[in-house]
Length: 152
Length: 152
DNA sequence: TTAAATGCAAAGAATTTGCATAACA
DNA sequence: TGTTATGCAAATTCTTTGCATTTAA
View 1 (tube, rainbow over the protein chains, first blue to last red):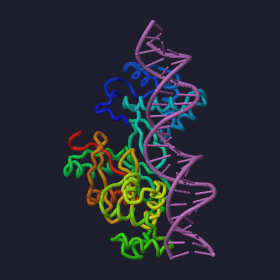
View 2: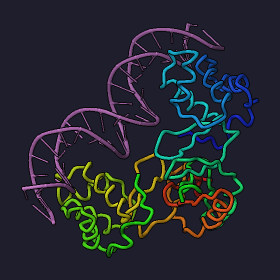
View 3: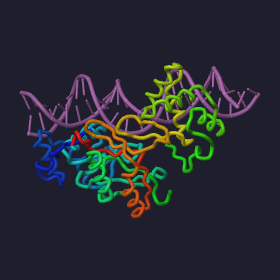
View 4: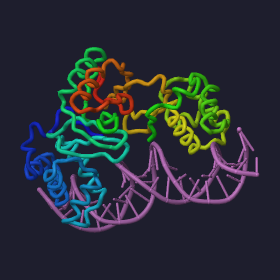
């Protein structure tokens, strides 16, 4: 529940590396902790879709004491800074990924298969929504559900 | 979690009235109970977006003993029969409405305001998703988030 | 040294489930 | 009379919060 109008990241430094992000965190009055470093490594190392639990498991390989609630708090913070975003791909837990690699999602209601949807596909909808309702769509946050090729 | 490929409703009777739906339920081996009748009345009487809790409150005006878990079970059943659908409009509880009045939703991430989105707007996206990924979108189930005119 | 971050346990919201009892057909 | 449906309590899943303690700056 955190969507910066103008992401802090944009004018605060280099969000493309773990240490760069930590520097941004520090500049914003946050502290560089090992849980934050490990979490960022997990996010940068495999640029996919990860639940908080996945990320906790990854972090805990290095530091077993880091608690899931700490992961959630750090994820919130990183999202507030605009470094990461979360998406809802279905009824399960939210998934987190680097803001830089944001994209839409098609998720099959039948088998759960997820396909990354190029922003280009949402252009028309974006234009219509804007023109007719003044509504600016964010096609990334909630997945577009439906049926994949195999299931329909 | 219930999406009939070919809704039972289609070939089973008249789903446009409370008693018609109850008849469909009976034909499918279900029983006509007062909780089902009251729930259907609540759904038919105000054709909006209702959470399970809303509906329970409405039903309980007539029959205070009807439990929320019964509402959930009946909603599942009605959805399985294709009479109603549920939609996720944000992070809160799911909302239920008659399948006949299904539509897409634009929900503002800032203020929560919801706008009903004509299916027409999703035509282009539907066509592209089909052509490029073989994916058949269901624009009704998850809302399209974004910013409303006032908030953007 | 002091504000921020953490661990832990507990609470919270939304939904589901197990089981004994009630009630439709 | 034989399922099917219900009430109730308890469990589940995902996430948040309060609070005492630790730690980075």
